[in-house]
Image (cartoon, rainbow over all chains, first blue to last red):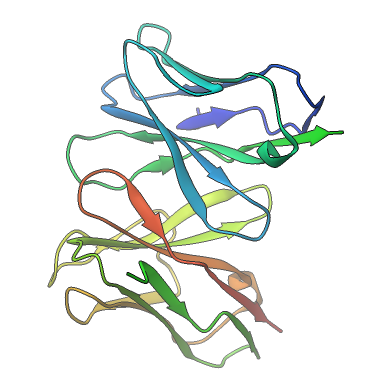
Length: 111
Length: 110
């Protein structure tokens, strides 16, 4: 089983739509969870961390379900500028150890 | 702060040639990483250095060597390049869990 799995997409949605991405991880002892964003031909950048209680940052909401080993990212009121690849990222160990990246889900927001 | 810088941005090599990819960070981070990113494969860890003076293999270390020259710099060397090493290479650094990435090096091996 792959360590971090994501639907590769692409998700093509109109401006203003709500879109949700899911991610599953294999290691039940995983400690930390993140969503990174990667624009075409650019480096990945942290979008948001994912906390057990769920967290929101403007139009973005992240949820974690430890029992199901499942992470989600919800984007409301999609903008053209949200078009990018979204990477699900997991830290399997505590502290400053290498992160494990999913292959990413591509989003295209269309006018 | 420049963050994480990488040189060169682009490189074309012939099979069998060697080269070193350079990475430097000015954030005083302890940990540094080298990844490669290929279409459909996502980011794969080549080597990492948890602190100055230490290096460890990642998921795909074969064909590569690294040097943690000092706290700022972490270089990746291809001794004898192969077409399978055509990829985009990203360097990253971290102090806590969040990793900061450089802009990448696009390498083509003919």
